[in-house]
Amino acid sequence: MARPKKPRMVDGVELVDNLYPDPRKRPGYYRYLRADGSNKIFQASSVVDANKIASDANTIRDIIVPPITHSPSRQQLTYHIPLYIAYQQRLNPSLSDKKSWKNRVYALNQFAEQFNKFSLGQITWVNISNWWDELTFNQQKLRHAEFRKLFNWLMSQNLLPKLKYNPFTTADDRPRMLPKQKPHKTRNTLTQKEYWAIYRQAGEMELEGLQIAMALSLLTAWRREDICNLRWDKNLKGRTLQLVIGKSAAQKGSARAARHAWNLAHYPQLAKVINRARELSLKNRCCPFVVSHWPKRRVWNQGKVHMAQIMPGRLSNLFAEARDATGLFTRLNEGAPPSFHEVRGLASTLYRVAGYKVEEIQDLMAHESKGTTLDYQDEEALPFTQMNIRLSDDVLGGEF
Image (cartoon, rainbow, N blue to C red; front, side):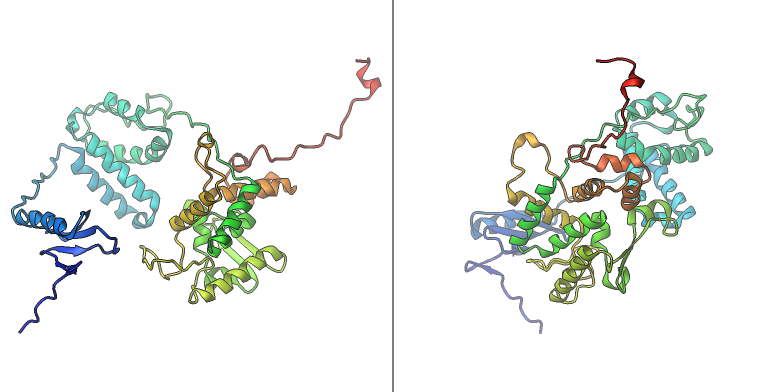
């Protein structure tokens, strides 16, 4: 004989079918289990009101008619875009693992939805041009190369009869989609004073893992993702801290990517940070990651392999919490406050102040161009070059 279900009680009142207490145990909140298995979290003034809301939902639970979905017609882009995506993934199986491909797939599907009102035979160069001009510079940059491939594929199957050539061609002898000018990038720089204020605030908030991440970023100029992915077994070889720069590897492949190695015997500040990180890792139940933090709430996010592992998004949030707690960024006229990424910009500036050449800092930051490195630096903190040349009176040929 099956054991009867234990009634669910809140404040001495039994909950009706499909109604449960809030999973986060917040007073006044409840969870309703929908017919499709999803949950609806809602607020009610009392248990009685919550039961009434759930009872009303139960009355229509079994009579909700699912929306009617129609398969796309062969004359619509929504039919062919999935075929193109599958074709590309068949040619390049590694595409599925790339974040940039996921962004391009989203852009392709979005394009198909926006042009769903047209049949393939109605799509013209003017239609595409009008759509293209509404995009931002970054949106155009993401789409241009992939859409050139897409239209080559569509036109090879004679699916776009009103197009005489690929509108995303790079040839100069034909009209083409012209990109917008790159907007001037203004950085919300982080000053040295602000950095140490946030660093000390993180200590007061017992965010030692954030302090270690900030120290690593300032000393090495590594990105947030690279710092979060540092592992004791993979990146520390004896007394050498080494790393294949993640963004560089994604762009060039592991063999041609920027590869950094720091001999800790020559960098006492970095060695001090690593020793501190090791002690914290042991406290955090032998976390395999160099940067660790034991959370107040035990939540397993996607991709997390240890409870004390700090994911990149969480690191940014911790930095924002410590930054806002300093009270230095409350004025409305300051714009958006600096993010964790600006620690990297501060590192670039400080190395320049220390006398290192831009080319050396460029290698440190794994930038393709010197201009990108210069964009990271705080112009107000940069040193001036002392001029040691002069014109003598006899060369001038006169007096002022």
